[in-house]
Image (cartoon, rainbow, N blue to C red; front, top):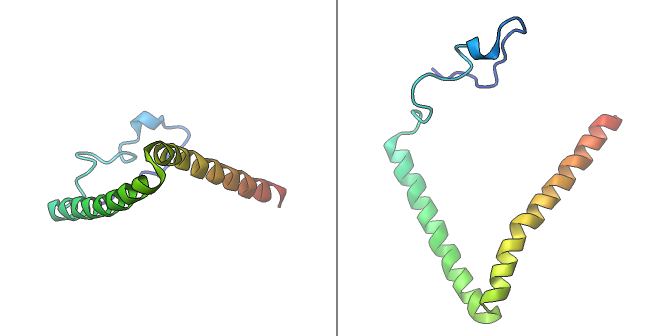
Length: 95
């Protein structure tokens, strides 16, 4: 039985006394061992493909520019997502 973690308690009851807000037992009990092996296989295949492409690109542009680009990419995507979320929130508030 899955329990909705977003379920809220009434205001009269303290959050810590809500017995069904957090599933009892192991949190990761919904994973089957075969699923874990499959996820690990997919992860390794993606890592292998990315490593080959990154190595080829490193041979062409050099190690330092590749590392700088790899470091700047998550920052750039985070900034884009933050701006997108703020614009969407602004539109919701204005509506």
